[in-house]
Amino acid sequence: MGARYNLMSYGHSLLTLHEKTSGSCLLCFFGVQYKEENRIRTVKSELNTKSPSEPAKTIIVQQLACGGDRNFGYILADGPGGSAYIVDPSPDPNPVIERLERDQYLLKGIINTHGHGDHSAGINEVLDYARVPVLGHLSNPRADMPVSDGEECLLGQIPMRFIHTPGHTADSICILFGGSHLFTGDTLFVGKVGGTHKPEMALAQFESLQCLMELGDHILVWPGHHYGSSPHSSLGSERLNNPFVKRLYDFSAFLRLKENWVQYKLEHGIS
Image 1 (cartoon, one colour):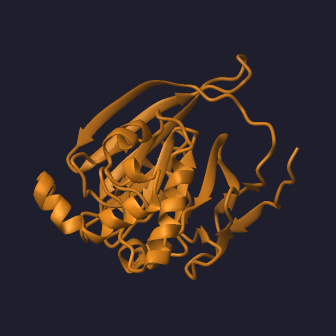
Image 2 (image 1 turned 30 degrees about the horizontal axis):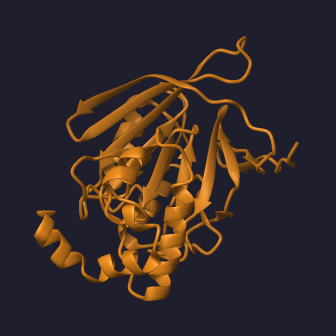
Image 3 (image 1 turned 90 degrees about the horizontal axis):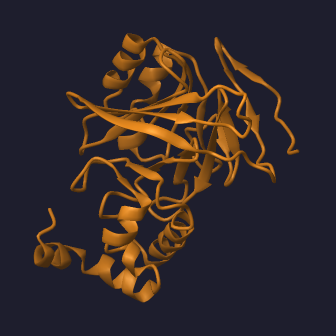
């Protein structure tokens, strides 16, 4: 069994970090429902553990519009009124804070997918609301609880794994929550990917996306911006429809699409 980190206290918030173990639970999700509430999308699903005697755990994902350039922030919870993490509550954190208060979640921490201001500018305001740790990659200066690739933490009994996905930025991470929800920041959008400014950054992103595509088709993709035809997707859908993902067989083809993306969008009617 993997080693366990010491329980760490931040005010009224407690967070237990675990190293990745060789054996993992079998995960199964049932009864996924989607509910539109103004600009908020809520997903609930049931997590069954290996033991049939254990009760199912409810996973809640709430997607909120947070201003900026169609930014999304997220609430991840282990049940109604339960413990919660929030992901990228920026640039306007108020929709996230208001939802935390309305649904009476106990905030355990803030996860920052990367250090760009449109994903991190709201962190200080959230910290004024609740003194909690900020989780981010080891190279992310906003993180006071840094995480490395493959590191896991538990929200209640729901596992959450951090995946280092450099490319858009060196500190980019994705978060796999409950084995079936992937929060991709600016690494992967619906039908698109995050911008890069140098070929070496594009290569890092190419390799990061290859890593993500090793995960199952059923996994839901929750991006950092509403840049696509829908607010969320699945890895299976991206594998079939995302022109960048369809070029992960050849970096030269991937880079060529990036370099000619404006023309490609015009030719294919992509906004």
